[in-house]
Image 1 (cartoon, rainbow, N blue to C red):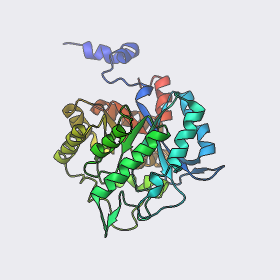
Image 2 (image 1 turned 180 degrees about the horizontal axis):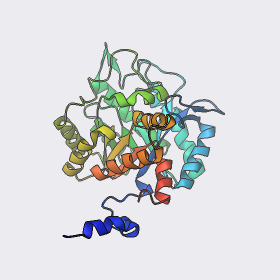
Image 3 (image 1 turned 45 degrees about the vertical axis):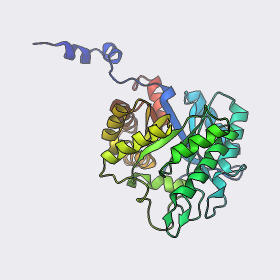
Image 4 (image 1 turned 120 degrees about the horizontal axis):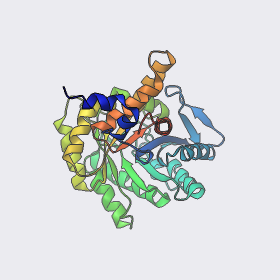
Length: 326
């Protein structure tokens, strides 16, 4: 009987040496919420351990992440004022724009700054674009998304990540960036974004729940696989540099198939509901938090993700330091 697999499993040094799935800290992206005001670091009730930071408090978290080896962050803005067209998303003095300027001032090129490009946090109705009646009007929304992405690049963003799921938004953003000289700013597209129940805590964090209806007309039906592959290919054709599959935990089959289909990197977004489930289960003593974090992360990488967007980025970096993940 051949015993080689058993010998590999029985030797911890050899077992680590021959791991099929390997990751490092450079593949981690931490989402951070920034809000107007000063002197506030407000914990998000449905995401214990996550906070809304005013810009003067944000730097402490960024320094903490940098020390842990997590040097890629994605900004989500929470404005004071909202309106029908989400003007705070593309305002020169918008919350994300100000956060970018301050992060760049304090950290220079030590951090890689990514921005979420969407309208939902900024519109009074909570939808991801401008409305025609009670429906999102795709084409007028494209102009505002492109304007938002450009304003982020001008403020210092290294990468923009459109999450709105409007048709044609990657091409619109690419053209706008290129026309203004930002040809080297990459686009990480939320290409395969399902209409998911896992987003609840995020909408609490960002105050972005729709005031009526839902987002099923522009986010994807979770029953569909082929639709996701078509969306991914479309975004590649339009000029996306990376693709996101979102959520991660329940969609590893999609991560695998998208990674096999395209020749650009695929990111998995482990969303707020995944984070909240682990935190709640651990608080109740039902699960071991660090093991859950590790298995969820490795599951996404094993499925084909080369980038992992997660609120557990700092914890995962610690698990890498301890050798649990490597």
